[in-house]
Image 1 (cartoon, rainbow, N blue to C red):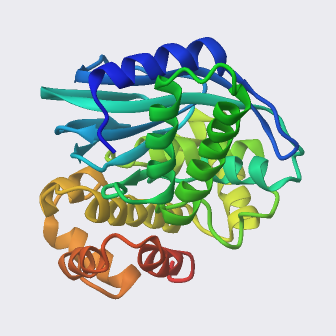
Image 2: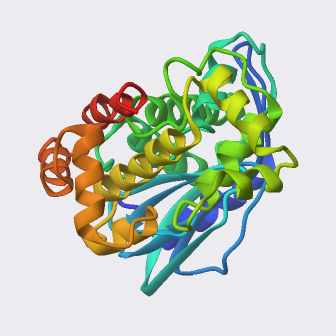
Image 3: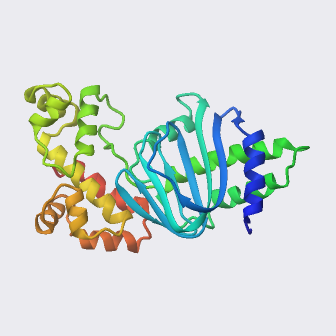
Length: 315
């Protein structure tokens, strides 16, 4: 399927005019915008309160999300979560398909609502080679059909559009990588102070963190915070910081081409030697071997999970 700038322009005009609310029994969505932008050279750092999924149909560039930069090429599929700072850049220009949406009606106990909720806990929503996958083929089909302006048959476009969103959500859930929660705490009660403490720790992993500093940031005493972490997470403050740092490191090793030194420093370790020592203690494998093993499995999320879950039992 060849997507030309003219086809993308016609498709975007039709979809943005006629396909903004998608209603179905499983879930209903509000689409903020559809796009098919040729020669996309990028944008400024920004965030938005909804999901935005992008597919690179042609060209090369860079995608920066929460301080991590990914290489973009033809076939790349990625998702920006609500509230996450991100930016797109390309010197030569790219042809990018994108859709921004939020769920407006769904049973909180239903599968679609739960999948979207789980996606918000994933660090990694980036799939480097999705060109021949069902969601992308469906997306291209939608673009081509919408470009024909099939107004006598709007139900066809609506059906394809709703199916596309469901397909993308399911695809990211099945194929994207690293969650921020652990098996023990994913379904248990986590208080607001502990959530705030974890959020602060994750946001400052490259800094020297202390229990006192985190406690002050969330307005708790060191003793109160230490007790809450022990009761709700079963971890001490040092073990929590270490596990989050190793998760960050494993994430960067898996999905970026950053050097070991850059990964170490971004994860809060001043030297590669000490970083490697802790990495081996937690995961039982050196950072270099971990990267080779993950890349050798073509970034399969199951391989990454196999290692990352170990951080919850080795602290």
